[in-house]
Amino acid sequence: MRHLLVLGGTTEGRRLAALLAEEPGVRVTSSVAGRVARPGPVTGTVRSGGFGGPEGLARWLTAHRVTAVIDATHPFAAAITRNAAQACAATGTPLLVIRRPGWTAGPGDRWLTAASLPEAAGLLHGLGRRVLLTTGRQGVAAFAGLDQLWFLIRSVDPPEPPLPPHARLLADRGPYHLDGERALLREHSIDIVVTKDSGGTATAAKLTAAREAGLPVVIVVRPPLPEGVAAVPGVASAGERLRELGLLGARRLHGGHGGHGAADTCP
Ligand code: NAP
Image (cartoon, rainbow, N blue to C red; front, side):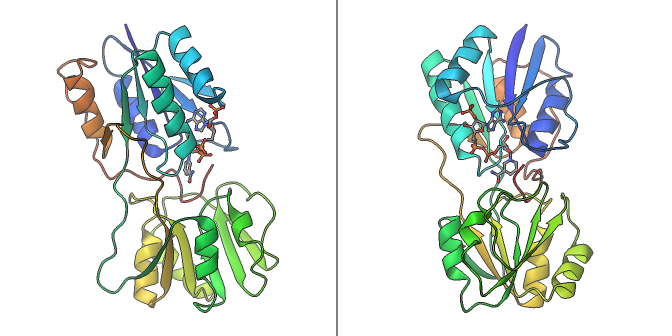
């Protein structure tokens, strides 16, 4: 029996767990950070909470006889991806990372890229006064000093303080649809959208709505993958790679790439 560990907390993680559960001779454990109050349903065995750094993860891999790790975490969950690379290297465990493709600007988009949340905050002056902030509940502190601006902060769970002084919180979870995003921008007279480059379709409608409204979008670029780590763009290609590695039988996994973000907010 092969034991696959799926590092999840995303739609890709949930889809992969559901698909792997149907594979004969495979046992799957999904791991989530355990930060979301009401996480989405996951097929099969789930463990929750940190492992205790790369050393803790390495110990877990050995103790639970893990055959391979599939890192299906969010593109901005850089610490767990780094830990997985180190723990897998230390224990000789094969590692596959699923990285959904990032978003690309099209005609009519007014995108400004930022290397970090503080850099994104620094770009807002002069762009407008009313900001839709969708960068997740962690990291809102980077915007806390912007007392001249008003923020609509959308996240699954309440954001961690400190918050900007003029802000309204909107608890919501994707997928988001274009009509709703258009209405949100209009109703709150939003003139700037701030997002991470999460990629996927679940949270992309805000980009279309912003383009239609002629609004600037400040996009925080992704952290790089650890050096030497193999990445595939989606669940289907992960299945193919696992088959090439001899970890799955001949049956094909179904599931497109591109993926859906768990939310545009960080659990
Ligand atoms: P992170 O900064 O990369 O990780 C911080 C610490 O949280 C890790 O060192 C690890 O603790 C623990 N951790 C993270 N993901 C874990 C997992 N799947 N299973 C067990 N422990 C995990 O992660 P993050 O950005 O806070 O994201 C946490 C979770 O939310 C991830 O599962 C991610 O897929 C999901 N998520 C994140 C975002 C985002 O924007 N960052 C968006 C949507 C979903 P130890 O060192 O103790 O092992």
